[in-house]
Length: 217
Image (cartoon, rainbow, N blue to C red; front, side, top):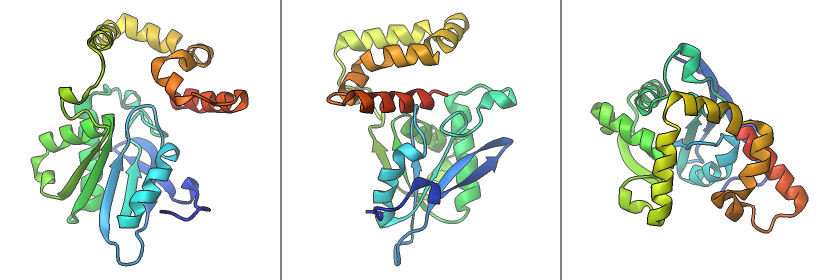
């Protein structure tokens, strides 16, 4: 595990690629550990949020964790007039791997949506699969049977996703539901947040809400 006094800022560098500006965390490996590890995080997150995990991964080699377009501190595809599709994210990740690793092999760990993007990238660029010596899914959506939701909740998620897939409702969600005041008021009462914030004191809850809201912007 990393040293207690390590900070994410010590390893974060700018990442400017394909007309988009973002950030990348790069941790050199310990002596004798040359494995290249690429960690791709998921939705609603940042480099800082996953720094603890990358410290653990760092025991096994060099760790690289980039922002992807619209994630963490990187510009969105909309800046280029492009849609934020899984295919576009997969293409961007492929370009990053080609630039970063060239002739080197790499182990990839994908977290949640990050694993979906990695999987799509390998489907679209089978030649890059030859570079991957290990692929790990962390809470990834590898198969429909991996979900443990009740049938009722699964149906409600599907209906909600379909409802907000249309442009008018998507705009409403972005402008109204993702308003900072609304998020601070409503987010703590959602199913996942209740578990996440369980047992927190009032001041700790306030700080955590600030972090969660920031991740949406």
